[in-house]
Length: 488
Image (cartoon, rainbow, N blue to C red; front, side, top):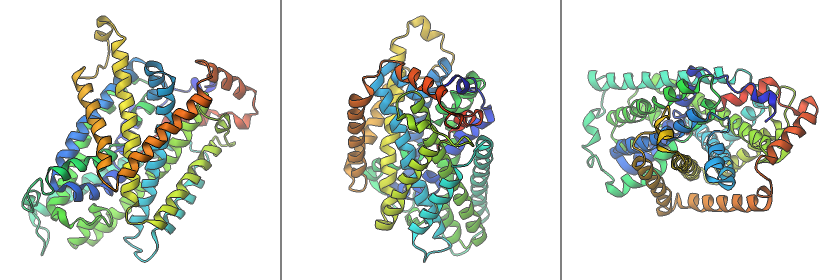
């Protein structure tokens, strides 16, 4: 990076990191993707979210251990390079950028589904095209207030989910309904808790893990925080509360309001349930909330992918042209690349509107789980290089070492293998393998000849020699601190 960018690498406050991380888990994965996981596993999906959440918590604690000890801006991409080698760092960084692209495809797809609630006769691809062009154009302008904006949008999503849970519990307890079977017994009366059997329970993890994608943004943002020793533990320690409150409790309320088999996957289950209960105004409000959440996620995805590619170009891991920015500080080339990639989502929604979300979510799951595995492998490698005395001085050590990490890695491998057992998700495994092979080929043909640090030094000198319009201004460096992945 340039020296100018480096001097502005400690700007995010604790509340920004906490709510950006919180908002990253409250998006398409919960509002829309949960319908697929409910259909696959039935009520047992609640247990799947708890298990998946526990695994993600171990990943984030492992990331937190490294981030507190070495709070670099490159976060897990830098750790993979440092502890596993240049190839691992190269594939981790680009796979994370790929993850952001795929998650954004899922978000724009979900946006089209949400709009169908009010305009059922309008083809979904039209809404997808509109949101890609509008939000993409917005990202070509200055985004000085991105961090603050995402804080308030995330806060709005949190408040909406809490309100939904409270309203749902009130309907259940006080019988504020008519003609519908509303009871907590819906969780076990319709085929049992494991209504779809062990097979359905296991297969649900392919979608369940997609829902947690983006939580690793804690490493990207907290690595540039004002006080990483406080902000990182604070953000990571919120993960268990988030899992229980926003996934397990919310979906338990949803399936208590209406039997799980009534969730049809044609829209957000939150909106469907309140609409079927005759609570029209609540359904309308919830649809507005999920649309706002999708717009926030799309904006964050485009911003995150653009800034990540920009940062990789600064480190010599991407074409130097990706460093070019507008006079307002937006990396215009990476933004246009994102818009072009999202136009693929328009085509897919036109060709296969019924199955596209599950396919995209599965590909995103592969990319996400791969990044999580690299985080775990990096932390294991880092620990093995430490002496007992150095390990004892860690300020935020990951728990259950080393067995927790071993079990979590095995779990992540199992999730990837699961993708091969369904015709809808098998394409994700194929795409993932081809992607990693492509990255390896590019690395050996283009990336490997660079000596350690050569790309960084070369790019930095080139940046200083370029006109001001091609050099990231102070406001853009601040934007680098606010990358968020809002997923799905």
